[in-house]
Length: 120
Image 1 (cartoon, rainbow, N blue to C red):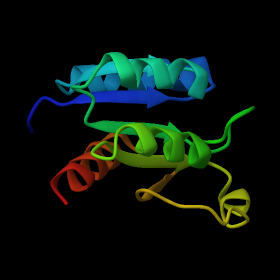
Image 2 (cartoon, helix red, strand yellow; image 1 turned 60 degrees about the vertical axis):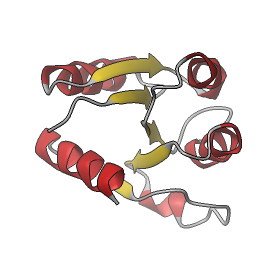
Image 3 (cartoon, rainbow, N blue to C red; image 1 turned 90 degrees about the vertical axis):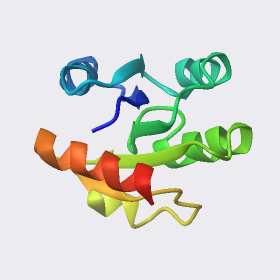
Image 4 (cartoon, rainbow, N blue to C red; image 1 turned 180 degrees about the vertical axis):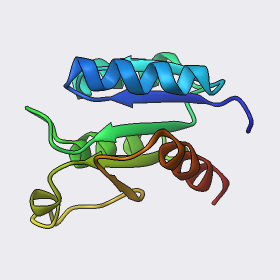
């Protein structure tokens, strides 16, 4: 697996930390943000970010709206969503820029999903 630069966005610091650590252990470069307000500047500052792994249900700007903002700035960046609230996802009628990985997931599932998104 090639080393990739990833942006992990999750409002839960424990989840974000575990995911980031696991992705770093797998050889990726990982930047972290708790919300869209932290993530957008990172996208501007780091052109090397290839993929955003974002939670959907977050306070303030949800993951779908954040991805809309990110894709407006960086059309080339890939998006992989995650959520533990599938019932809320179905209610959203906006653009979806990538697949959704349901929580809970195993790290192998996340790594495989990232590889699929980046090679499609």
